[in-house]
Amino acid sequence: MIVIIGATGNVGSKVTANLQHLDIPFLGIRSANGAPDGIRSGDLMDPDFLKDIASNAQSIFSILPGSLYPNWEDYAELLTNAIKESPVSHIVNISNAVIEKNGEPSILNSFETKLNTLADVHIKHLRCANFFDNLKWGLNNGYEGDLKLPYISTHEIAGVASDYLSKRNFVGHSVDVLLGPADYSMNEFCQLTGADSREMLMTEESRSFFEPFNQGAFKIAARTTANTTSNADPRYYLDYFLTNELRKG
Image (cartoon, rainbow, N blue to C red; front, side):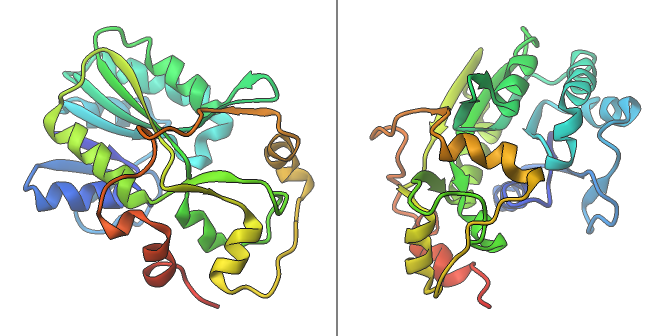
């Protein structure tokens, strides 16, 4: 059995669709109430719930929900404790290609480190670029207009994750960097989406997130042929997202 944490999210929903297509059994987990048919909802900060969903799992698809970022250390402790008492042998964990900000490890990089305390569990960390899906939130954000960052399709991430989950063909603790087809700036997205203009908006709450990027105080893997999209699947490229998935207006 494969447990999919975040089964209704941008990546998790595509992982579940891929596993359904392959006729591979899984248990989808949603942390919020109101889960659709076939998906189980529960409190990821409840140790009994975590132990229950891990109790019959061979593999886990892990993604840290944004709502748990403030409590990520507590959640990581609960999750690792549940896995230690389970038959789980493999984990595919979604991380971020930005591994350092302001000279400190990013939250997702630190979460990787905590999972790696599971010495007997094989773990594949997927350090991914920003999602194309982020554009659904709009172009008015705290990024400087000319700042270029890598972006990736969640279809591609789900494809890689689903392959690892179904084959369990990785050993030890390892990392794949997935930087998508190219780097883009907000100004370029503005042109590509046909937006007339954008505002650089930064609240006091979001300042700590955006400022390190604008000041160049972050560390990310260099783009190489190996971590750049090469698959012919059209869903993996920006044109497909802009045409088929970006909500207009």
